[in-house]
Image (cartoon, rainbow, N blue to C red; front, side, top):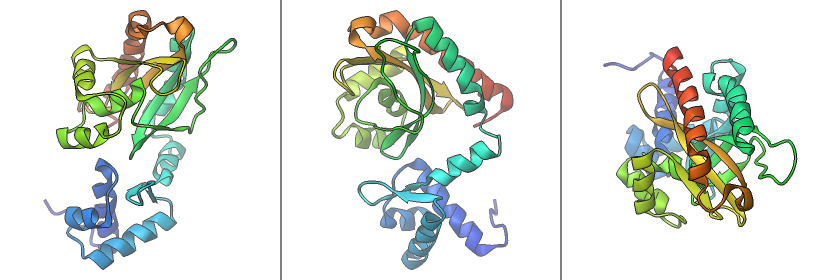
Length: 240
């Protein structure tokens, strides 16, 4: 199928953005993925970076930039974020713990929505927080269903193992105890697009004293139900 729009520079920029959809990519990776000449790929990536459509990670690799999320939200087309607030608030009220929604961006996961516990000891994760993909139950969810090669890259330096991710896939939820931060436990479940791809993770988090060292026993059913509600919204609207 001919994907040419007739405007060459836009078609090439779209190739660059599409190549970054799978995660952080070096310049050599962009050249291989797009078929563009190295100078062209570099020039386009730097131009897109100027407009915040592309960013760099800590290793200097190219990643999708924050402007893309801002545009989606401004256009009112992000059904997931539009629905997340009430679902997370209900999850907070059911569990008594802070609730969050995470999306992956390169080597990090971003908190894109949250409902905080109103009082008492709590784990606060402000919207916009950039957290590691090497620890925490949400990180496990966002990595567990990735392609094998990308999963193996993500496991390097992580505090969980391939065996742990296999268990996550089997039961459909993840938990962590003191993995991301001492004294904090969490439970997470996947949000899926209509095609079945895991695109986000719903979580509850709080002190180990309340969640215990088996937080999944307490809160996995409620977290799974919240994730399924968000997935159902995406299925109804056909939003990927």
